[in-house]
Structures are given as structure tokens and as C-alpha cells.
Length: 279
Ligand SMILES: [Zn+2]
Image (cartoon, rainbow, N blue to C red; front, side):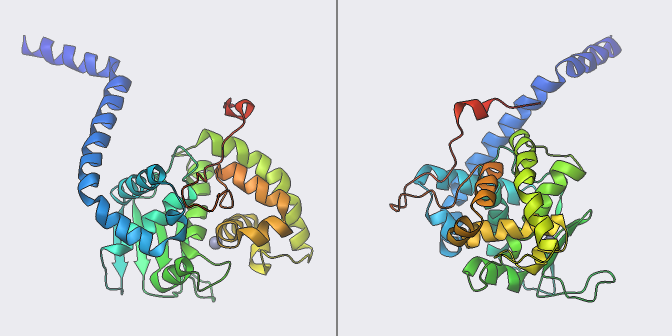
């Protein structure tokens, strides 16, 4: 009799697999939200102190931003290498990922369970140049001193947090395909129609504000373009307007779309026709 009950239970679980998974996800999200609310003030103080981007969001978007940051942080294991860890570090690194993906539906960069925070520039593999950060199958690596300089605006056009999260976003969508965002994948094709000719011209020696490093390969072009898009949006739109437009479409957000009140939405509103998602 017990066996019959167990078999019936297993069959039931198999049949109800998806709805049950969704239900558990919803319950888990609700549970996380309760815990997040208890910590929201602290998250707000950390993020608003460092991130200009966050301070331009309206109140509703700020809460969404912080909850995503909380969820991202709690989906990763953070490792600290030769650097004294503090409570701000995982929050700010998570916030960099959330900034990049704020216009997208998928934001957890699933595949990457581990994030490594190192003290400063480091050597990796056989490369002679020191690294500020990198992404590989073992995780996302960032040097803390460069990360902080990037979000403080001390290094124009350079934000290693956004740069590495840009690599990670491409990684989960195109290499591991572990967290594909339909909008992002569809629009990336259109982005490349604009971006590839610019990248090719740079490889042929043409200079622009993206700088020489962006001509290294198309992965670096993508990651550098993300940095400049957020860090130097006005010049980017002036000098490379089509690329700026393509970037704001693929990320579904526009850093220049403010009214100046600090309470304007920056999320790009898609035209009705663009809402139909292609398979
Ligand atoms: Zn890179």
C-alpha cells in the first residue's frame, strides 16, 4: 500500500513538475522579499552612496533595483582574495550587474555561482598584462580597487564592474545558454548589424571614443561599449549615435532619458510592435 502511495506521489510530482516549480519559485521570492524589506534601508544607504545611476531612478524603480541586487547577491558565493571583506562589497558588485540588466527580464546571470574579489591588478594565465577583471567558466573575477575607481567616476570611460558583467551577460546568453533573455537575444542581432562595421573599421585603424582596446576582439568591443554607454553617455550619443541607439535597444534602457527631476523613468519604453517577442 505504501508503495502505491509513493508511486502515486512521484507520478503526481512528475506531472505537476512545472506548476510546482513555479509555485516554489513564487514562495521563495516572497520569502526573499520579506527578508529584503528588513535589510532595504542598509542596501539603500550603500547603493545610493556610490551609484549615481541608482539615484536617478524613481522610488518604485529604486525598490526594484535593490530587490534585484539582494536576489543577485544571494544567488552567488563571494570569495575574497587578499582583500579585507566588508558588507558593502557583495552589494555593490551585485548592483553593477543589476544596473547592466535593469531593462531586461533575466538578471541573475545564472551559470555563475562564484564571484571572486581580488585586491588589485593581478596576473592570469600566460598573459603578460595585468588584469583588472575577467570572466571564465569558473566565475566572475574583479579587482576591488579598480571596481571602486570605476563606480566613483575616477576613471573616465572605465568601469570594470560593468565591463565584466557585460562579458558575463554575453556568456550566459550565447555560450552556456543558461539564462537566455528573449529580448536581449533578439536585439543583439540588430545591435551587431550596427556594431560590426564600426568594430571592423576600428580594426582597420579608425579611432573613436571607445579606444584601441575595444578593437582587440568583438567581445572586448561589446564590454567596452557598455562601459562608455553608462559612463560617458552624452559623448557616446554625439560621436556614435547609431551605436548608442542600438545599445539602448539591446539593453532596453537609456541612461540619457531623464527629465532631470530625479524621478523620471530611465527604462526604455518599447513600441507596441517591438513587444512581440520573436522565438
Ligand atoms: Zn574584457
